[in-house]
Image (tube, rainbow, N blue to C red; front, side, top):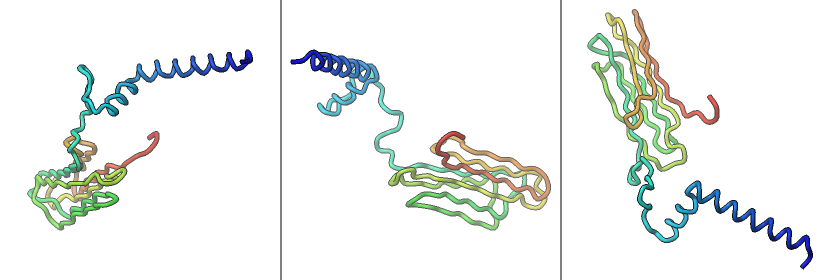
Amino acid sequence: MSRNAVVARRFIGLLLGGSLVLLAGCGIVEDTLEGITASGPTPGHTQSSTPADQDSIEVTVSIASDAGTAIDLVIDVDSPNASQSFLEEEVPVPFVHDFTVPMDAFLPLRETTVEAHAAPGATYISCSIAVDGEVVATHRSEGSGAIATCENRLRLGPS
């Protein structure tokens, strides 16, 4: 075997060995072995915080005002396979409405928008959007003719 072939084999061996060490440090080797052997995680290994049986996203929209009602409420939940809308001329406040979005598509929830107008005599109106219990958008508008608008949009890349 030529000297160049020996050097090349040693280099490849070092490269593969170093890669294995790096992958083991990242937990990739351990996770791969668990998948191959169908064994559970090793002690001290944490599972994902998302339950495996969670097959939907819960979107909750809330409206508040110091008046008894809000008017011209429009809610749009944009999903590739399950878009939903809610339109009402007048709703009692506080108002809460839940939407269930199935996770049956890549990027299942694209956008949620809310617009609510303050009823005559109200001094403020506010809206909020929560996704799986975490508030992701809020807005409060004050004065005569106030309009609350909330938006939660999927953003890819830097903001």
